[in-house]
Length: 365
Image (cartoon, rainbow, N blue to C red; front, side, top):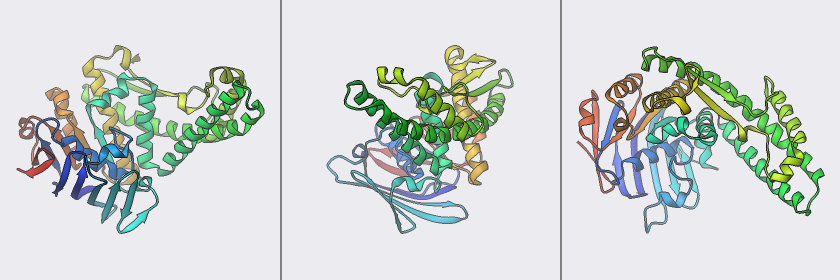
């Protein structure tokens, strides 16, 4: 998978930019605040996912402009393709001249993996960040998953709203059964997707971490499901969720929250059996995060047959020289976009194409 040409208009601080990247490594450098990350973010939107920085479309549009426009030509699945995205209150998408109903219909057409300092949040932060990480990764491979997750979140929100009405006496508890069934049915599917993906991620990341650490530590990853008495498939997980919702009904009404389901689950990452979050050093945590993101790319490659595009947003300065070398060696053969402030990073990368960014403009060097 390769980006052939990219055009950006009225996007954040960028008025009008057009460039054709190298099929290998592209270094985008310049001072902070001039638009380097904006360029990577604009490429990411072609995956069909939301921005990795905001969920508000209005924040993506240049000040005093009504809409932004992104155009990209890329090669994937043995053919050249063209995608246009117009951003106003909503996103309007055209693939090869055909208008799509939603931005989400880009899922699976163009695939990328983002590496950024915030990737450490997968290790350092709580369950919410870990669920977000795995949900985005699965959505890139399984567009149906994103739709299922959206329906599930809506069902949980509706159930929580009903819990409040039951608590204040404006509705009856009997109405919960329909919502319990929907939350359980969709939740069972989500857990099955996550379990399957976590096993693939664990195998790949463990091997990568072994290489980065020279075999000094053993990486492990476990999907922590809040429904303890679970199962082996979506139907069994659904039944387990349903049973727990019945058991916790009074508590849910009291707390006004749905207590069971995949929105409560977590990922546990360990090194030699100890929590990487609690006991890992800064270097170990960074190696864990890199291993997970590289593994994500490997899974995309293995399941789709396409090597994803790598978007490295200011990660080189966050890594010591050894981890920089490890990362670049694993990304050999990928199309890579690297942002950095220091031009010296270009000298460390062989056969790189360099672009200088200043005040929302880009210039090939």
